[in-house]
Length: 207
Image 1 (cartoon, rainbow, N blue to C red):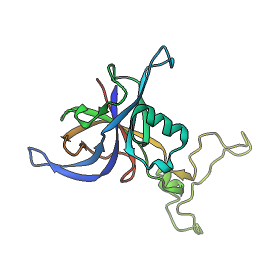
Image 2 (image 1 turned 30 degrees about the vertical axis):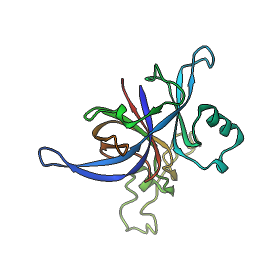
Image 3 (image 1 turned 30 degrees about the horizontal axis):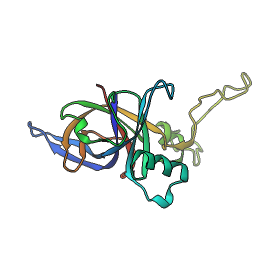
């Protein structure tokens, strides 16, 4: 499996040959610099490290600055390792959006939008207590009973309750590539991908 690092630009829609309006996401995919090639003999595993999106030198530590200098690259904001798909990769080369072909399917990984602390109705889709009669004051969105009484006298692990929602790594699989713009390094995929605008995403394809 090979891939590329990208940045979510936003959503739009396209019309297909049948005249149907298809929602899609525009991603700036690359160009990504190959910063390091890990080998089985030296590192114990095979992988290729890609870097995407230039970063100011003053915001880079000395260790990373030396890493970028050794690779002959400018400082990058996002670094990701890919374990397959770059058999003949060399440090200093670039991976561009021409890695993808229109019509193929890809997996997109991103960080979902953080929603903060939310209740069970929004977080888990609970229905709430529903009726507002019989003295149910301010209980419409309550979780209800969470335990089983005196036995086992505890709340089971994994009980769906209120808590922090979003802000997790999410992967959406089998998104079709609708367009590949090599001049502007843009990739248009069908449907939605996780994350907010200008957030980093990882696009993987099966070789």
